[in-house]
Length: 234
Image 1 (tube, rainbow, N blue to C red):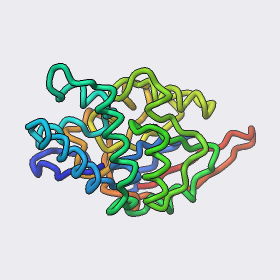
Image 2 (image 1 turned 60 degrees about the vertical axis):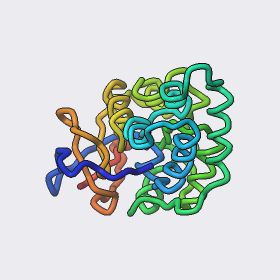
Image 3 (image 1 turned 180 degrees about the horizontal axis):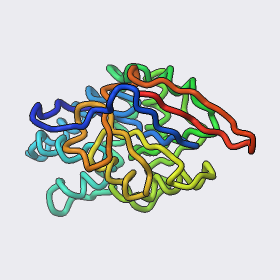
């Protein structure tokens, strides 16, 4: 997912030559690896038209949040939230036109050790598979999707579970995120977080920013004790 940014929104660019090291890398999906703007705007626009809702406000606040949480917030009183969320999910699953990967995303994923990568997304597993496939990206072997957590972003549950599944301490991981809710989730998990793209909002202290993955190079090394380190140079 990706939406037009407020030109006045401040971000902190990563100084050229900065290097961050980690033992594992955790990626959000929509807006971070995959640009699904066309589908998201279409589906939520239809919902807004049906119920007379403010589509601009829905798009402004739904980014990075589970669909059910957004439906619960905006749907009229008395709406069957579960049924409407399921309907929206079914609509999204059959619409893939315009879905593409972010610049450099495919190359970055291919350059990383497969057992050190996880996807942490507010989409369910079916939709995540569809969107990653539509964007031409391989699904990481470790994926924490909406159907595997009790609390969605900005709660840190998804990122904490991903770090646990990869067998790393959160302090040894790195998160890439594009939305305020996801950035907050990464930070709440105690994981260093890099913001990507134009829709991050005002960044908390310590969160660095890149435009896309064309600004990133990766090297992997193993020390004498057998500990593998992934270095990201920006």
